[in-house]
Length: 255
Image (cartoon, rainbow, N blue to C red; front, top):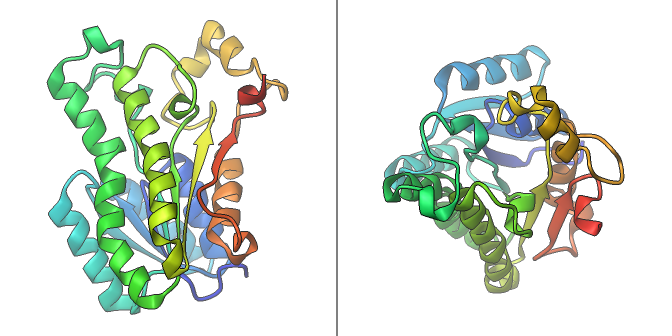
């Protein structure tokens, strides 16, 4: 029960890494807010957690919409009285390529560039902007941002995604520097290839699978492995850690 009675908002908790984290946080005693734009997925995760005997509430959330985010934070405080943990997990990537261009800078239309950043970077800004005052008032809190290996390496082929994830890394550092005096910790996870719906299609392609497994552990990661990292950073077990940029990538960043 490492998160006993903590109130945790997890964005993008309707699938993949967010879903795994919501389930794990709830098992560890947290009251989990499933902040998810896909209503069907969000309600399904809420039901699964409740059926297992734990606490979860679905709140429909578009992290790119500031007013929607403000309302979700207000609703959380009204219902629970505090916010202890924010896991800024929501993002779009390869699976959204039918809607947004995932390519080089020169091939990315401005509209697509802006929308990818609106979700992957501005979403972190929006959530943090409205949660931080609550945590400052409490003089405590843990924020975990989910970036990507793209945020710390020059991975080609999805430049708007890479720029947004690099922004998340930089924002993590400055937030840690700014709010440590309020006993608020801010850390960042940089996942490598994780077996989620975001890359499910490319995992069927042998060419991509070879590149995704070209790490010391020789495999892609599991959503639960990101959830475990997020749990550590969210919990008091990491009480002297802030500003950390943590690759969770099978060791790819080390070679």
